[in-house]
Length: 174
Image (cartoon, rainbow, N blue to C red):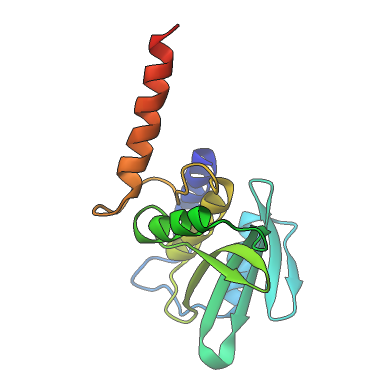
């Protein structure tokens, strides 16, 4: 997943040559599509959005022009048998490690999502949000992380540190 983040950052740099931050036009459906097709040339328009694959993960991006919103989504698992502990851990991650992506539940499915106003969305924000969404889907059940950094003050750092300590303790026996 870190490789995905690095690839998307690299692509963002390449696309940045086309639009500098000062002259970057507002995001709209057409511009969003151009960026998504740069990330996945086999992306497909689908209704008011797109279906694409990033790092072998299917991603849906939906727009709603009337409310000026966009949503990137990755289906993670069924929510039917979600335990209280799993739900609690997802909410902890939403606070500190999911970054701009979030775990959500809708229609009986746990989703990894990135939601943003469409017109003010910058290209680099979109690419970063997509990478974070794929990362939290891929790390569900383990580190629940959006990628590179972690917002302080939450529970995740201690939980992740505990995992390291547990593994180190097991390693002492070898």
